[in-house]
Length: 281
Ligand code: HPA
Image (cartoon, rainbow, N blue to C red):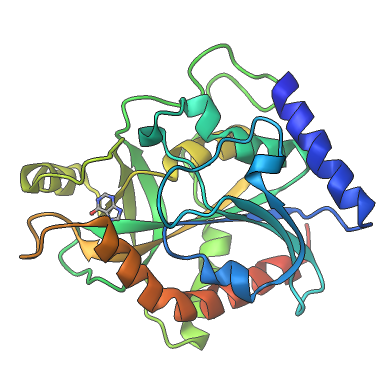
């Protein structure tokens, strides 16, 4: 908690120094989806390395920067996390959710999470986008294990509506305006770093998953713990193992994401505006 407060106060002074309004929304960008950040109006850029105790990503294609951006349509500010760290990098679950929790201390109320994932649902193709309707935590651990942080939320948080329907409707609206037909489904998270075997993919399909990845679930759990409204989208960067003839590679995942970056960027920009324009109730 001390470390979180320390990181938060470092960011707060940088925001105050520039007289900027503190955002209430955070979007975390997944593998290869960074173009969204490049196209945003950036008011403040903080490399993770300049924030005390912020863990740095060790994965190619994951930049580590916290950006305070302005949405010109609504006139409101929002946070972008360009690059995240993963459990498979060897960080503890507590470390994985450290950046998100820092921003929770700084007052975010809404969290938009994006990732690249393998498509399990046979109706999904590489290049599709999937609204995350729900998730399955198969990482074998949970960021809330240990003494409960009462400052954030309760010991046993409700997960019965982890992903906001209201925000999903706004996502659909933005997608329609951009001629994108969104898929919708269940995201299942494994620890990685291996991609799955075909037998595992068949198992995951039986369990009710539509897409598989190695991120997102820890952050969503920590956000829901703190009562934050969450919305998530997966970029289907590849068909999951065994569903196509190609072997999987991080290069393929990154290349496919790069192809979709422009469209993703425009569609997310509009979505963020719609969320920020919403009247607070
Ligand atoms: N499996 C797990 N994680 C992933 C995949 C996959 O096929 N694609 C992108 N992230």
